[in-house]
Every structure is written in C-alpha cells, then in structure tokens.
Length: 275
Image (cartoon, rainbow, N blue to C red; front, side, top):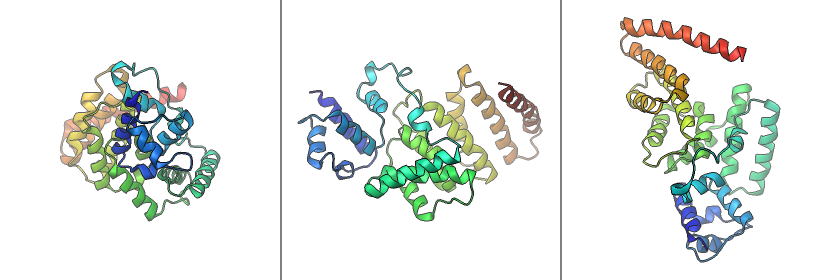
C-alpha cells in the first residue's frame, strides 16, 4: 500500500481546516478515513473520489500534491470541472442550482453543496439582479474562505465568482493570503490568481482602498514577465497609472499614459470581436 496517499489526504484535509467527521458519510465511516490517513487500510476508488469531493480537492490536485517531484505540471489538467460554474447561461445555471439544492437537502452537513449554491446564485445575480445571496450565506462564504490555510482550484474559482459579495477588508485578507502562500501554485491556477487581482484593483481604486495595491502590483509585475501574459502585462501598466493618478490627480504622465492605453484596449476589443 502507498501510505503516501493517506498522508497526502490528511494534509489536504488539514489545509481546509476540516475534521474527519465532516468528510465521513453514509459511504465511508470516520474509522475508515482515519485508518486510511494513517496508512492502515486502503480505500476503493469510489470512496476515495467521494472523500476528495468532501474536501473540495480534484483528483488532479491530489495527484500533484502527492507526486509533485515527478509530475509534469502543465499537461494533466483541464478546466471543465471548475468552469461549469462560470457559465453565463441563465437556464443552465438554474439547472445546476436545482441539482445542488437537491444534494444539499439529501446531505445537509456537506459544506460543498451549500458553497456551490452560493456560487451559482452569485453568478445568477449578475444576470438577474432579483436573485440575491442573503447575508447568512454571505457570512458562511466569508468564514469558509478565511478559514482556508491553502487555496486550491475550488476556492479560487469560488472566490472569483463571488468577489462582489465580499467586503473590501475581507478581499484584502484573502488576496494577501493567496499571494503570500509559500507553496507553489499549479500552472493552471496561477493565471486565475492574476485574473482575480486584475478584477480587484479597479474596485479598490474606486473605493479608495489603496493600502494593499503596491503589494498587488509587485505580484503582478513579477508574474507577468512571460509574453504569454501580454494582455495581463498591459492591463497592469494601465491600472498602475490609474492608481498613481488617484494618489495625485495632477500626475500628467499617468494621465497621458491612461489616454494612450485606452487606444490599446480599443484595439484589443476590436480584435476580440473580429476573432
């Protein structure tokens, strides 16, 4: 038996601040999980996948965590599992909402179903403002995200989808937690972090929440050196000029830069429309 699997599962469970009793279900008992984590027993594939779902970790992420030293990081991952909550089709979102609501009714103690419902409602709100996430669920989301010791893909997609639900102080706490993480993020997660930061900065500037912006710009500049991140690099320069103009409205250099970059973004938009 590869006892490393049990140790890896325990480490990821701890990262999520989850107790074994939160993972246990009708399919797998507390004792089975405990023995698996200690390398004393094996687990069927069905039970193993069910346990991974309970801690919001994909099989790919688990494999990366268990075998990082031998893993070719760039080829094993696909976005399909996570992107289902980023769709903009109202009908499909309502279908997903019913599925997750039914699952929560059957398994009221499983956090993931409630978090998925919050995420779907958050997306639906952008399409239909009449659909709201109540304060109780927003607090549940906030407490969950703040409790995480290590963000995996699930949490990043959850956070990205629900940005508008969280107050600015919480935003600052979460983003600093993400970018200061010592563990190396997976290749397919890193662009998601850049996307989140680029969405947050205009919100912070507009609301004069400026203290954390130098740290965010430093992170962006150090992670967009590759030509693969050309759009992110250009956007970073634009946002930095916007930030400098916010600090000093008489900064003519920043004002001029904003005007010239506005033309660049018009070009981007026309190319996007054309292709």
